[in-house]
Length: 434
Image (cartoon, rainbow, N blue to C red):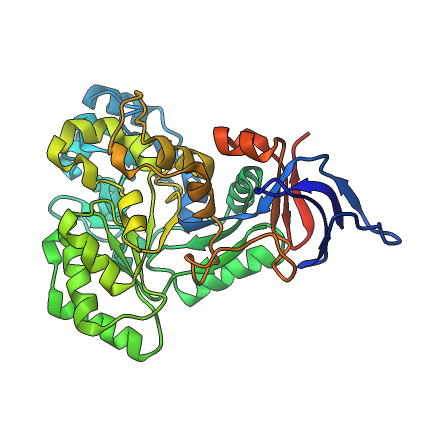
């Protein structure tokens, strides 16, 4: 393919010749025999976006799940109403997602029994790390005597008994193509070899168009109730000895502090990552810099959950939430992601949140953490293995590109997914807006 009259982000207008990779760039390239020509007419061309932290199977399942978060459910009676009207899946279960205590307080099996129909029901907390099951569901997974029905998402002793939903990936992939996402990193911690193979097969078949990178088996989720510094240090040491980088899920200050201490004791690998870094105390910034670890974070939650943070988090700590600017200034490598489906999968919304720090109501949360539009966009250009290494529109780079229906200045002003005119992966158009 030959893309003609493409504007790069610096304003330069060029022609770009593609195969699987970018093979030539020039001011005026003549079409070759049989070559497909795409006239960009001065529209902006950028590297395809890479979402550095998603959960593909969960995203596919979420398409057929009932949402019960604060935006959908107002109180306990409303929760009962929504669950009563929820579709029962082919497996006989109701699957609900996005729950937060602001809806109806802490959720356990007794509360869920009271508000749910007499079928197996499981409700996922919006953090993604916890499910609550009602009594019918607990009996189904062989845990009829479980005291509270609250089960970790990463515990295979119960989740392996569930029927896997293998559909929905194609729909997720189409949506991502429309956003200009050409690659994703699946950060699901319990992915086995079979799961990874299935994702690769789905990609080869064309069901999943994006290039897929998986963090497993080096991903670890921490819980504040079980923070063992010595055990975590030993786990990191073992992984590094096998040549495997680690990625550690840190959503609280305690989790981050313990992880940084473990990394300092065990030593670091060049591809070690901190996932989320939702809370970064001032005193942890220097440690992050010293460790050289990459932070993959999701400022989209400033927009999606910021008003709840304003209610729940002391004002003196607001600047510690979903930090980007402070980390960048300190020399910490930062990449952005959406955490789909626990966050909205639109990376452009993530960029806007990083730039404006606006909550859903329009309040500003952590104004000092805002970054420029160019920096936010750049943080989706990283390579899968090294998110801090940015891809560019240059000869030799993969022909994973996005054509945006506006000049560069307008692209950076609006950061809007509606500007995605076409998405190319390995030189093939996988999305084109009609």
